[in-house]
Length: 65
Image (cartoon, rainbow, N blue to C red):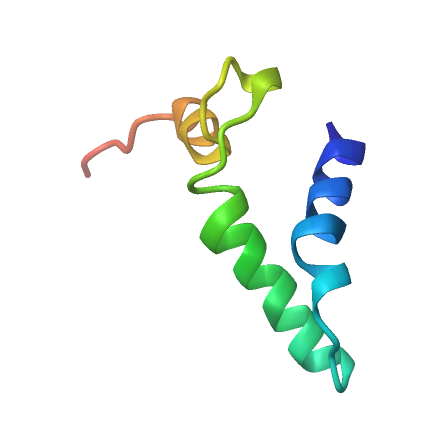
């Protein structure tokens, strides 16, 4: 799964953009991961669910104080 992620990141983002410094590159990669990859992209390894959906299924319910 990691190879698939890095392939998608490189093909969809890194190879299409020229960054002046590491700072804009870092911001762009974070925006890609948080804004698109984890929230909208469906994955076959996750039964075609979004990574955020799978992540929040594993979160324990919050307990009221």
